[in-house]
Length: 96
Image 1 (cartoon, rainbow, N blue to C red):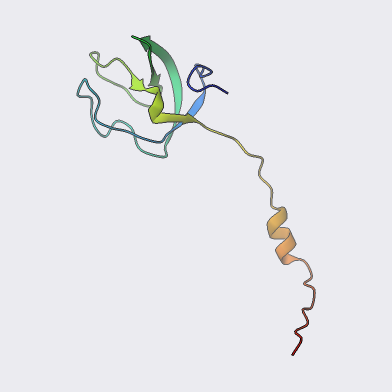
Image 2: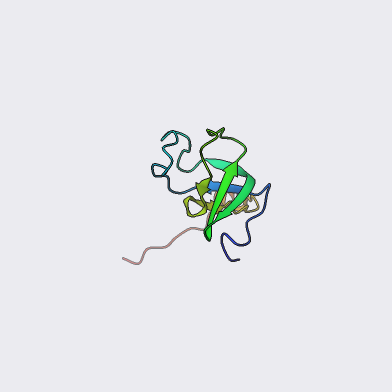
């Protein structure tokens, strides 16, 4: 997957970095490790940016830099590690 070229509207992304925007948007607009949904992808001067559904921005703001995000990777949930811990234990022998 080539990031951000493979990004798409509706995709869930997580914020991994946030610096003050060049346009002076609210420095509390994004929160590190929070999940956002891409609302629009903006390309200007070969720079890719995202607008996200969860954050309203001022009209003079262009977009958040795409490198501030990474795609959310969903992993299947498994409780097998916990059920294995509850199962019978093997006796350990210690040579002494």
